[in-house]
Amino acid sequence: MSARRSLGRRFGWLWASYAVSAYGSGLGFGALPLIAVLVLHASPAQVSALAALGPAMGALIALPLGPWVEVQRKRQVMIAMDLARFAVLLTIPIAYALGRLSFGQLLVVSAVVATAKIAFGAASGAFLKSLVRPDDLLVANARFESTTWSAIALGPPLGGAAVGLFGPVVTIVADALSYLLSALGIAAIRGHVDHPRRTGAARVRAGEVLDGWRHLLTHPGLRALYLNQMLIGGLIMATEPLLAVLLLGELGFAPWQYGLAFAVPCVGGLVGSRLARRVVVRYGQHRVIRTVGTLRAIWLVGLAFVQPGVVGLATVIAVELAIIISMSLYNPVLATYRLQQTPRDRVVRTLSAWSIGSSATIAALSAAGGLLAQATSPRTAITVAGLLILASPLLLPRRPDADQPAPEHSARVPTIA
Image (tube, rainbow, N blue to C red; front, side):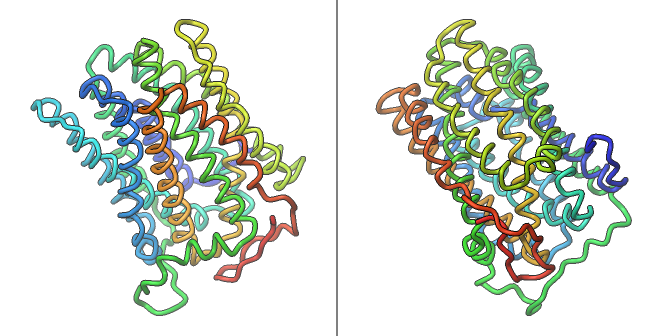
C-alpha cells in the first residue's frame, strides 16, 4: 500500500516541509477575504477583485520566471519563495497593529504570494521528479494530496476559533511562520544532486517563456487536461469569495461555522488521495481521469441552494464533500501524468505555464463572478458558475493511446488523446 511505501529520507524532509506550510495555509484558509469582509467591510465586488487581481498580477510577474527557474538550483528557488511569502505575509499584522491596513496592501500581498506559489510549485515539481523513481511519482503526489486535505480539514476550524479569540490577523501570522519552517526543512535536504540542466545555449532566450505552453498545447492529452483544469479550477475558485460573502454576510454564519463548512468535507480528501494508486492500478489512468474528471463537475451547483442555519451548513458540507473526494482522487493522477509526459528539461516551464494559465483563468472568472454578484446577487453568480461547470467534461480526453513516459529531453510522446 502506498501509505507504507518508503520513498527515502530526502523525500521525508520534502514532505515534512510541505506539510508544515500546508497546515499553516490551512489555518489561514480564506484569511484575506475574511479580513477584507470583517476588517475593511469590503463589498462583494471588492472581495472578488481581491481573488482576481492578486492571482492575475502574480501570473503576470511569474511569466518570465519559468525559463529562469529552469536553470537555477530548484532547492534554492523553493527556499527563496518560502522566505518571500513569510516576509510579505508579516506585513499584514504589522499594518493592522499600526492601524494602517488597506485594501491595496491586501492586493499586493495576494500578488506576491501568488507569484511565489507559481515559482515554488514549478521548482518543486522538477525537484520531485529528480528525487523519486518514476514508479513512485503517483505515491508521492498522493501523499502531498492527502496532506493538503488533512491540513484543510484541521486548519479552518482552528483558524476560525483563533480569529474569534485573538482577532482577524492571527492566522496570517501562523501562515507566515509556516513558510519560514518550510524553508528550514527544505534547507535540511542533503545529498541530492540538484544541478540545472540545459540542452541549448547558456543564456535564456526570450522565446523560452512560451516553451511550456508549446508543450502543453501540442501534446494532445495535456492540451485537453489543461483546458479542462483551467475551466474547472477557475469556476470552483470563483465561487469561494462569493460563498464567503453569502455565508458571512447575507446568511449570518459565524467565522467558526464558515471554517467548519470547509473543514469537515476535507476528510474526503484523505479518502480520495489514499485510493488514487489502487484505483489507477485496477482501472487504468485514462479511465480514472475520464470518469473522476466528470464527477468533479456535477456538484458545484448545489451551493446555490444554501439556506441559513443547520440545513444550510449541512448543504455546504455535503456539496464540498462530494467535490473534494472527486478532486483528491483526480489531482495526484493528473499531476503524475503531467510529470510523466513532460521532458526533464522542460518541467519547470510546463508547470509554470500550467499555473499561470490557471491563475489567469481564476482571476478572470473571479472578476466576472464579482461583477455578476454585484449586479444580481452572490447566489445568482454561484448558480451561473455551477451551470457552466457542467460543460467541462466535454474538454476531457476521449481515448487512450499507449502509456509511455516522456523521454529525458524535449520530444513529446502523447498517451491520452
